[in-house]
Length: 363
Image (tube, rainbow, N blue to C red; front, side):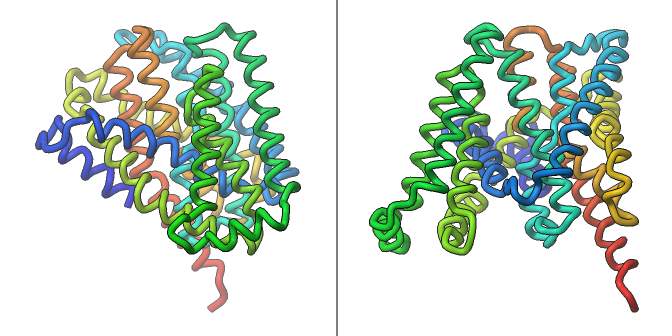
């Protein structure tokens, strides 16, 4: 569905058929859909499942990715007409957890050891660049102020998560339960209120709104863990996956200027070049997992980790284009490579994983 939605957006967008411009309603819903992908990724996080060695390996893998990305950007900086700034380092270190979560869910891999390792690596590949981007690319406050706001924001998120898990008055739970299937939909409305509050708080502190959405997902994910929270999670999944998700992926296609990729040979070569760098930067840390992965899972894991976060890359390219620090052609090539990776890597990784699983099953 992600592949079809992105391609649909490219076809109906202003750069091909010109049926739908990227403005007003579409632009607003695109932003909301972008935040929703991070919100649902946060809901699926279960630190009890990915804690310990998976999270430690994920952190070590992300640090290795940063070092590889620094080396790659240093090489790109010497290429004529490219002049890749340091913000490209963050783009290459991302993992699209919002894209991977529904794929892992639908394939039944989310609760498996492989799925837990991918979720841990994806969490660091999503949270690490968001935090670094908020601290280094903020246009509201200096780095020290942002660091203070980050600590305060994380404290608020931790307090909200603790209240959601521990403070459960029976009377309040009874009211929410009675309104779960009524027209009031009070639990769903309360959840959306939490999302809105953390979105606004993140923006107020100078962070990107997607950081607030991810934090809201973590809070609600912890609060609704277990069988009692399943009805609410199902309602949120229905709302987000069927309504908000398509606006992000179709909007990404609408917004993407496919004609810009053919301006010159350098830009055309940058697309496969960046796609390969995504795989090298986020895929090579699979070497740290060689004792934890079963036979035939190394390449699917590398491909899954190399699926970039479209939402973060869109934000980075917008900041770079707005400040003039990122060449527009390089920005277009970076988004084009990210789209190519989202279209190819999950499909290829899923096929290899399914083939490996079939080969491992007894006759």
